[in-house]
Image: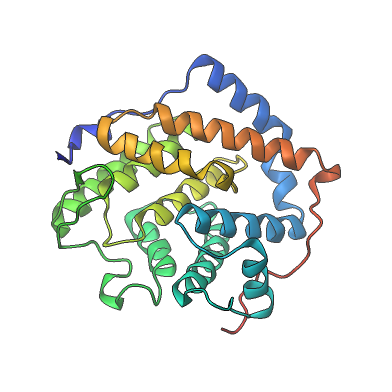
Length: 269
């Protein structure tokens, strides 16, 4: 069993020259301004983001199930309420992250994101609050640190280190993997980390990764690889592949306009 190594926070990811070139070229195809200026695309890609984020967590809702839930408020027959709630919380967190663009990423903003994602799925006393109990990560035999004061110190150090990373993609990946590694909250850490990764790229003026479910197995394996080895490599490869796939699928369509249309804003539920 491996235990938390605080020195991990001192090591930052570095893309290979080939990966860096690929990301720069792909990012130029889809400027963030093109995404943000079209309200319909913000909503439509929000559907993809909510769906892919849920599927990466093993959610059983299909895309059609998710659309019916978000658009019509209809839960899927025979599927867990917790799966529906995950979709709704992801939608609300996505909207929150979009409205938080430009805000400094600090411990309190991370906690706000977690509070939204964990609403009605964790006890109120655990929403946005650092955990006190020990936990064990299945699949890798990793034991994260514990203790509120220590977790606060490490989260602050993590966020301060991220500020020093110039490359926006490397900064976002550093935040993503180390928030997962720290396991600051009792649960819902990976979803929180993915939202923080998204906000980090938005704050850098870069189109965020809003899909990636197509390679969900690689996603989980890459996170476990970081827990066990401290290497960013596997997740970076997954990220580059998923980012290229997302941008190429969107820029293939004229003016990046997607065909679906419904309002992702919060409905009564």
